[in-house]
Length: 88
Image (cartoon, rainbow, N blue to C red; front, side):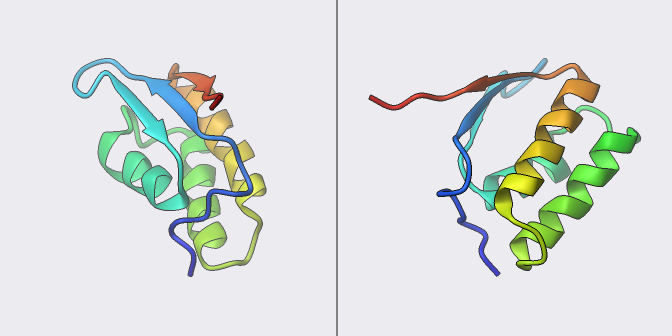
């Protein structure tokens, strides 16, 4: 299990309504926490797909990049703005 996988995707900043208003997701663990604790709605099809993909990525059944694609689709479904974080 790799909760801290970061090398396969670029960190993303999410703009949420409420508190906290902004989150940066850098790892699979961050994403899992976000999906289970801070997600605004848990009834969308893309949300359910992203939760399953997160479990699959943590357990090594799919790549972190495959999860990341599902995570971004779920964010779009929920109306969450996602911004790629660029480090200099």
